[in-house]
Length: 95
Image (cartoon, rainbow, N blue to C red):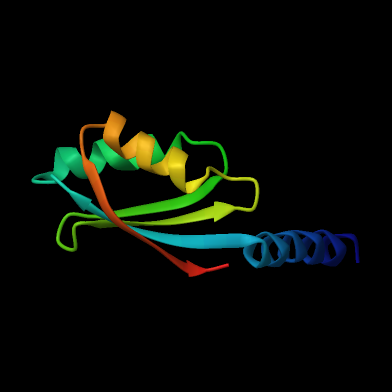
């Protein structure tokens, strides 16, 4: 019974965190290699409130899943510029 309760709490926490997450797509100019992808992933994952980051060299974008108290669009843009790239378009995919 105790194990079932713990599993339920863990699943509940995961569901709640997904409900309060926002997904953002950022088109990025200047990525040319896997080191670019690594640098951006490292930057995003070090930002408070970024739950997941997936940078695609092929698609020249990043998909970020952020919490409600995560970084603002302005902070995300600044992080990209500070890493040496240019954000060209930002789309909020889900709220």
